[in-house]
Length: 481
Image 1 (cartoon, rainbow, N blue to C red):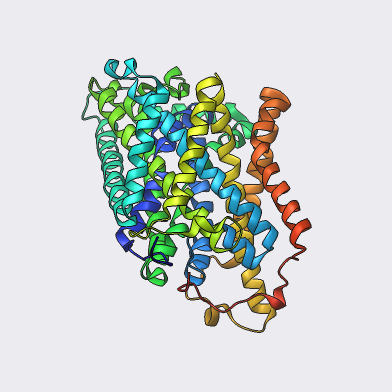
Image 2: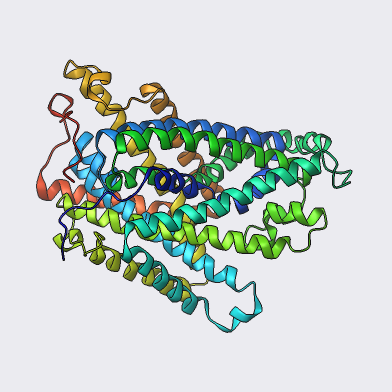
């Protein structure tokens, strides 16, 4: 093994597209229809607009941390340096678990999508999963630049798809297709469902909307392999916010203006032909929509799985570099890739495939664990930024003099985002308990409990205390790692 340090080969265009691609995927292509169906047109637009603003607060906070402390596998490192080493240890491993689950679920989803075509039905989902895992393993093993290029072009495909959808949707609304049912009147009619859904119904779709934006934070992980994070991170934050906010709100508006909120297909999120994108095209007589959208969703999920492979290996590298994991995980090959960490992650993904293969509800059990873990990671990053700001004041300095980039929303935006994410987690747990009892709620608690046990174990063994504000290291660095 060579190269003791990761090389910074990701360019600004890679980082921007990775952040955008991370949250324009199955959440937008599939889950958005369920939001319209449950919350109505007004509720769907309001929910995504609100969560989009909150995500901007989050991204501004993360951008501040990533430029100040650009390390690969950031979130555990943030918690260690700015909150508590024990929390850094627990969150670091929790973030690895998260991306193992995300990558595994995405690869399993790929196998299900391929079964849309009769030819692939002769192969089991397990065998297809292994083939895709091998493909992504090789892509990630070669070079981070290859990973960046793959993400860049797949994201372009997704963005083009959304843009075409918006153009076609606008044309339908203005009557070019001759569909008399499409238009503002449909949007207003669908708004009636917002009032009937009530406040609790609206809260119920917040977690779905937040999950759709999951993956945005990956931009912070790429900071460790960016040649100039002080410039690329703030630019990525600005671009991601406006592009995603426009994409999501415009998409919600068009879907709500063309498809009835009572259309039963919107709730069938397990069927690829039930994508609201597909339904819109089908409603105007485009019979090839199902095939086209199947291919697009396939590339979208492939992109998400690719990101999962990348982030999971970098997280192990980060844990090892911080002495929170075996030293072998920080060994790099000639391409500056943590190959042992990548291989270790791949093995655990195979275990997830086995679990899903022999458990009828295994797929949904894996999926249910993801949403709350994402928000826990977001919460920790927000607390890290808030504590960094407090430490700067405590040590008699100004944020502008210490931080290479300061979030325009300051800590006010961070406190707002923190409150919203905590409320969403509580509401999600309550909703799970009311609909499926303690067993369903427990799926979302497994990984947080693992994190808690890791934290307690770390504290008992090392006796290390939390980071005091007056003792926190507020000198920017990161090029060493």
